[in-house]
Length: 222
Figure 1: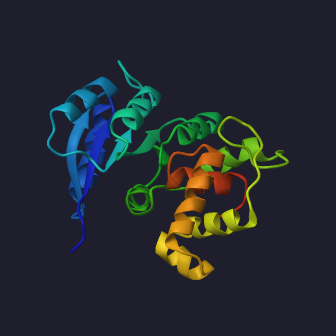
Figure 2: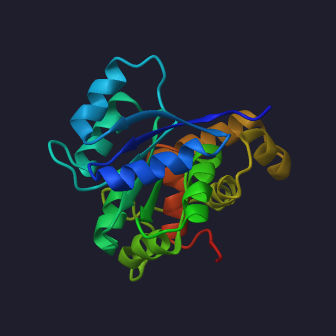
């Protein structure tokens, strides 16, 4: 039996929000558990809700509290909730900033239904969703970097084994599967994963994947 994905929708554009809400309600594996027209409204509803969404689809420009501020609040108070940005803005700097701030995906509002549904499933199953727009945005700042840098822009070095583990993480292997492939213990894999998080400054697996893509340690093909 497949899990139902609980989704929240935060957007002050009523017509757009109603369209996305209708789309979600027509998908049997999705459940729209919350709607809000800005960040403050959404946080207020979260406090009184018995069900937390797995994923929130949110706009960037909203009154009261915008998407960037809301993303920060979600990261602090509800780290289990994944964020997918739906925005009219395709500026690379904005996309990169939101991804670096912990958003799991970023879609332009003119995307089609299949792209949106695919993004939701990808974020739910893998913790991240990379589009060509995101790929371009996160790789641009790293184009001239001589070595990978952490979130504080300090150059770092990864060992050969850490790179092997990172690539397998990007291929969506579990710790047990990585241990089997590399002939090491699960505890050792945990150690390498923790070292990768510490070195890069990433907060989670999604951050590690985006780091690997940014510095072309792992290639995403379209």
